[in-house]
Length: 209
Image 1 (cartoon, one colour):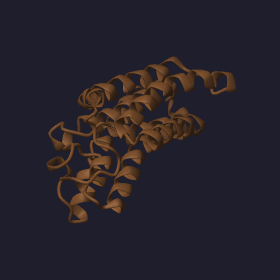
Image 2 (image 1 turned 180 degrees about the vertical axis):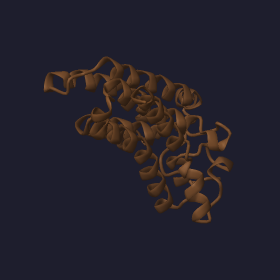
Image 3 (image 1 turned 120 degrees about the vertical axis):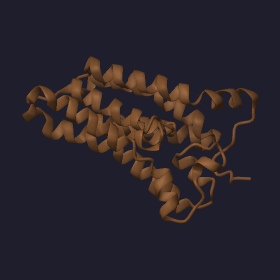
């Protein structure tokens, strides 16, 4: 049975990641479906474009938690079931992919930024702070959520490897997980990258038309 624990943990993380909280929160709060306006992306940034900051904050927190909780649970309780860094990496990636390709929403999900940050915080709180601060700094100065996300995702594996000097004990599966998530995040932002190059990308705080 112990051999199935990594599979069960990974499956549970994917199912949790498949909960599209942007859609759920918007429906509960009586807002328009975020898939029908703005970037049509079911994420916190697009919910913000509805003009409801509270809904955007709740969505952001829930999307981050579905990345944080599975990783944290495996880190804390996993060792007694034989779950180590390889499972942490699989669980984090599964939660992230669940957000991108949710089984409950016809595999049409968000871009995974908040869930990515949740996974990163679950891996190590210092790594989460470094990655989160990178996002905040880029977002504050340039006002582009997409650019901030891309830069933060690119630096996360670097921070993790650097953390080995601080005795975070960098493990190959986790590094691969961070790198793969960064590639998926960049892929999901390909349209944003094109708009950034053309100077047409929407800035943070812009409301829907």
